[in-house]
Image (cartoon, rainbow over all chains, first blue to last red; front, side):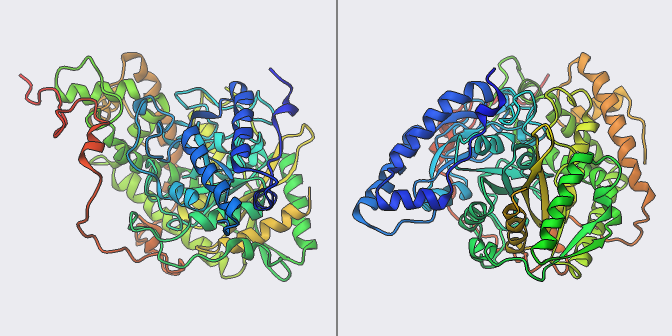
Length: 484
Length: 103
């Protein structure tokens, strides 16, 4: 194993990349080749990429280079090397969702977010490892082996988009796409020291996302800095006729929004996120971040979100109930793995699912099916939906008084591989600060906020109300600028 | 609502979910489900009488105008041959499956 330091490498910024391509100093094709070399060099140790889409990437790079050579105006992401979490489809490129049940599946269509990146000039490098069906907080549930944290390969990168966070931290892509259902973008961003964005539910089309829990699932970007993440979100956001639930509201210029500064903003700090269980070093870093916001002209306001303690149980009932319905489609009939042993249809369903699904996916399907079953529906799923409303309304009341809320993204820095795998409940608690925003549908950003004495990154979560991503970016920029 | 799940119940739920559990998987699932259900029983502390369940955040008042579903209308979808290429077994027009009627 190489020493930890060798894996962390800051990616170029979009501005640097674009300027290079525009002036002719850099060719998109050379840039893509450099990234493929980097992937070849470090992927064996980190296990980030599951498949590469080299041919498609080089064709796109050639298109960008031709535009630059002609002096045509370049789109926002011209030549930017981007990696895609393997729960998002790319036409003709294997999509596994980290599961054996989808081994060999090549979707016949592109995910809308992926297609929009490509239309904006991005070069799509390939598909990135993740927890099976995005179920996990450590990236140890992938059927293709765990991803390792580039900061310390003995530690997890977070989950389920741990691969997408690790790819940016190790400079195996300039930016990536991940998905967040209960914290799966924000927590790995925090563990790997990069920026991760949870957009408002409905802000980004979910067409082409292999669904886990549809009322919670969101697609969002990872990048090395807040402004780049804002630019990427601007590209993928907006209504899509392929997703009836995508919001019709217009998409602001997020990068410009992020430039606005924070003078006079009111920032809420909820007491419940600083209680027992918070690592003291994480707390100290977040307090430094809060001081930086004060210095940047913000008013800091203590607030209370008393229903926070109910978020994890609520989340695991809602998410598993939806998962049990969404994952019913994996039955060996239309795509993916089919058991070779079964002689009848019903035996084929059971064996295909038994052979294809890992333990965590089965556990969640069972819990969800139980919570939805006759006799238990009202007590579990119905109750969780009621508490979900209480949690969401609590946030709306808070946002009547503050512009943004800041919290630690995770109660602890990246933990060691294997540390929590034997106890699902302790793994679920890793999401304690992220699931509330997931249930409420609001948006947020995890921004690096320094590191522990051992050099493990700490992330600050900046939350803002529905469709107020620009506000979260402004606050995150101020934390970033403090250079903690 | 804190129920104790038994092996029989896990087997029943597995059947509903079309999941086959190996005999050695069952005790672990019983243990994990009970631990999780004990934990979610915390929700009983809350009085939710009269609270309208929230299934989608688009139902929230004051969520910034997220909502408005487009009309649900018939339109062309994926090409059949493209879809059939991914099927484990097909005759080109239909998915082939093992026999349905069990005797």
